Image 1 (tube, rainbow, N blue to C red):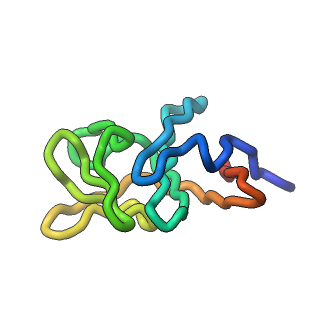
Image 2 (cartoon, rainbow, N blue to C red):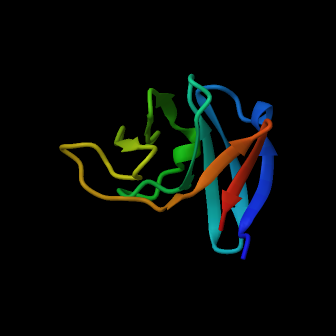
Length: 102
């Protein structure tokens, strides 16, 4: 069964920025890094549920706007000394289109 869903054009996600998708059970933030990689995380920091989509992207991390927790975009894990994790969703880019596996 093919669960991949087309969700955006790559150019709709700003470099070092994000775009939010509303899904049945909440929000997913799509992040685009400076090297054009795209990551998808639940749009909630594991600390106090801050909106990660409003954070600052640097390298392959995003910094939560509430309390400056840094979250690894590949794993969803908070970087030390902080601890916690947010959901990560499989994402791929083909021919300039972004696909999310739900």
